Amino acid sequence: DGGITQSPKYLFRKEGQNVTLSCEQNLNHDAMYWYRQDPGQGLRLIYYSQIVNDFQKGDIAEGYSVSREKKESFPLTVTSAQKNPTAFYLCASSIEFGGNEQFFGPGTRLTVL
Amino acid sequence: GENVEQHPSTLSVQEGDSAVIKCTYSDSASNYFPWYKQELGKRPQLIIDIRSNVGEKKDQRIAVTLNKTAKHFSLHITETQPEDSAVYFCAGGGSYIPTFGRGTSLIVHP
Image (cartoon, rainbow over all chains, first blue to last red):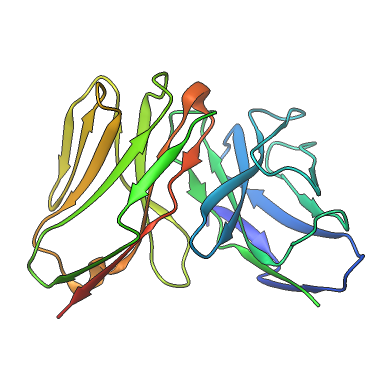
C-alpha cells in the first residue's frame, strides 16, 4: 500500500518537553514538507526538504527542527522553544520540489498540556 | 516572499448552484497554482491545478482560471452537490516554495 504516513495520530505533551512527529513515504518522492494547520490560518510551511540530506526553513520554523537522513523519512521535532505548539501537523511529499502535486499524510494532532 | 489571499472564508450555496472561490498572489514569478480539497477529518487532496502558461483548465464540474496580469486565479464549481462540502485551499509559490491561502469553507445545502 503506497502512500505517506504519519504517526502518532494524537500526541499529548507536557510543557517543556520535546516531541518528535514521524513522517514516512514510500512514493520515492524527492521533496518533503511539514505544515502546521490552525483554524482560519490555512497551511503554514514549517520546513521543507528538496532532497535527502538537505532541508530549508519555511515561514514558521522557530521552535522546530527536522532531519532528512533517508529519502523516505522526514521527522519533525517540536521543541520546548515553540511557544504555542498545540496544532494539527501535516506532512507532505512531491515527486520533485516545486510545481508539483503534493501528497499529504493523515496528520498528527499535538496537544500540549 | 509570496503572499496568497483567498476569498471568501465561508461560502454557502444551494445544491445545484455554482460556487466561485478567488485567490490573489503577489509574486510574479509564481507559475504553479494548485487547488486542494480537505473534507472534515481528512487530509488535503489535489483537485485541479494550473500552470502559468495556461489561462483556463476544466475537469468535469471543476474549472480554474488564471489571470497573470492581475495576479489572480479562481476555482469554479458548477452544479454543486452536498459531497462538495469541504474546505478548499489555493496555493501559489515564487521560487517554487508553496504558500497556501487561508481556506474557504464551502457548504452545499441539499
